[in-house]
Length: 236
Figure 1 (tube, one colour):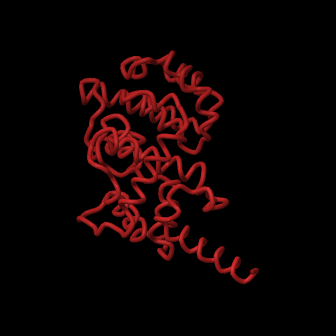
Figure 2 (spheres, one colour):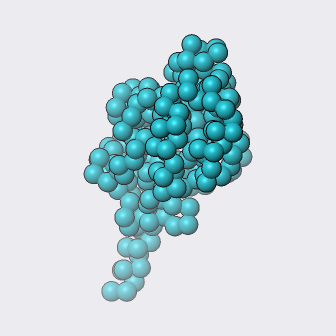
């Protein structure tokens, strides 16, 4: 949930941002939806990526866009055809919501996907994360986009003792907002990078602190490093 006020920037935030962006430039995956700023294509990818692994989405993304290359094509398609092109991805409600979104955009926004988070959030099937993701990935706005991966990274890096209630969720969104660079390519890259870190390094099963590019700017990483150094001294 987006912050209501200007929160305090956490310690080590500049170093975290700098190290994360440098790592992403070298190691970020070349995913097809990262090659575009087209808001429709970004939306399609975000709907497909909901509860679905990247490797599975890659196999469907181009096929779906070939069948429905624009928001207008999707809006006027037969629902059965949309489901056919989605077949194999599962969670078919996403396909229905995506088509309802397309119809709403055509009917109420002259076929142009909004660039404002509030208007994006009002579209069918779009929550706070997706609204932020589209604003950032399509329009390069400096707005947070906190999904499960990002929340986990922020929690471990800056709020290791935080709870899991609504207040804690708002705190994570506030922290995400303070970390963002100014609008433009860097804001796009930062949101992509922190998601990538959560997907590849700071995973749900294990925090690979020894491989983490932001370890020195992360509360959990610094704590783990101290433990390692303590064990090494005891073993000497």
